[in-house]
Image 1 (tube, protein in one colour):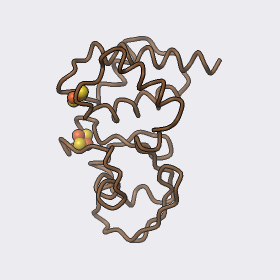
Image 2: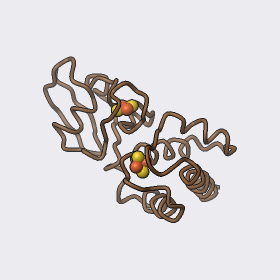
Image 3: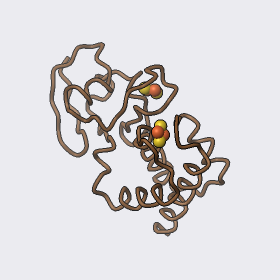
Image 4: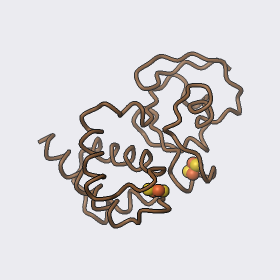
Length: 157
Ligand code: FES
Ligand code: FES
């Protein structure tokens, strides 16, 4: 099937098999390897991307489900002021070790900021429970997420 989508602001038109996963299309056809692959069963969150601003797991979403939509991967955020600020906060909190999980965490945090609602630490923890990290530990990641979300919402006021 031919799909046409806007990926990170760039129009993409491509013939894809009906069973092609969004994750495979992004990584293998478009070279967007910032979206990671691990569990492949929608448990770890490393394949998180946004379709029209809504986070989805690329490993359980078909590429055809993204047709006529805006797709955002971590590459689409790089270079934005949000990304630079968030990266700085994550580094300062030592919330990144190998970095494999970081794109998924940053994209989830980005959607929470865009939702525009002030969240408690527990709500942020809950919202991030679909993102797993195998090496840093969650304390620093949650602290970084809380700081990023608080600071970004404050900027919007
Ligand atoms: S690889 Fe998709 S959720 Fe783990
Ligand atoms: S920093 Fe290594 S998996 Fe999270």
